[in-house]
Image (cartoon, rainbow, N blue to C red):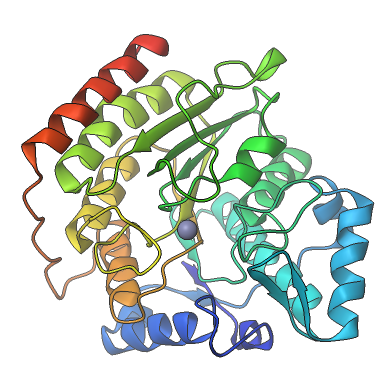
Amino acid sequence: MIVYSEKFKEHDQEYHPENNNRLLGIMRHLTRMDVFEEVPLFEPQPAGREDLLRVHSLEHVEKIRKLSEMGDANIGMDTYLTFNSYNTAKLSAGGVLTCVDKFFEGYRHSFALIRPPGHHAERDKAMGFCLFNNVAVAARYASAKYGVEKIAIIDIDVHHGNGTQEIFYSDPDVFYISLHQFPHYPGTGGIDETGIGRGAGYTLNVPLPPKTRDRSFLRAVDEVVIPAIRRYKPEIVLVSAGYDAHHSDPLGGLELSHSCYYEVSRRLMDNAPGLIHALEGGYNLESLPKSVYATLMPLFDLKGEPPEPPMDENPAVTRYIDRRIDAIKDKFNL
Ligand SMILES: [Zn+2]
């Protein structure tokens, strides 16, 4: 199933890369590809304050509410709020909660087409276009409402999800795994960031150099992500589904093809009880809809446009990443 609401347009800034044309383009493409003839579409319910407060401080939630009520406001260099951003951000988190509810009704695979994105938002801080951490709110909701004890979050956005990592850094009940460009915004996500206290070993970062293409990305999925998930045996898998690692994206330097998203989806679904996707980044308006479609293809057995072929990888890049993947496998005994 897919979750979407037209109300997401209420958080919008025309010349900002994170604007509502992203979702409109995805919806247009999925409609043109007849996806909604096969896959049910649901309107999300907004997350409640109690849902946000399982993850964020009261001060943070109140700050977002008040800034939003004031109308146009900015946090840091890059994160904007408009008059209805507080409610739209609650609806964005709520989109993933709807997917969690539907998972327990039997919809194993889902995709929340939501914005603003979430994975940079920390417990007490909005940044990187993110106001509330949507997947984190969903993970805590799954524990509180359904008693889920083991949750995996797989983050394939080109940027490291510093917020998700921070929120669960000492928590063994949520295993955070991220593949991302490094060094790159926001600067976190090194190999040695593996969790602390009871959460030690439950944060796994796969930092990748610029020009990483499908071959090495999929090797990391096959040899690191999937063995880690198989060992952990999560009851729920959330995917921070960002598409700014596509080669056409203006904000990323990895060079994945649409096929890579198809392959990631296909491989993960064979190794998880279900996949709940939450849209994160992806800023090329031409390619973003196609990348999302490539993710959906194996999940819902969709036909249509073949994903684009992968590009060959520079052998020096491949060798560098192979060594890095071997080091991560050693560190985590994979
Ligand atoms: Zn991103």
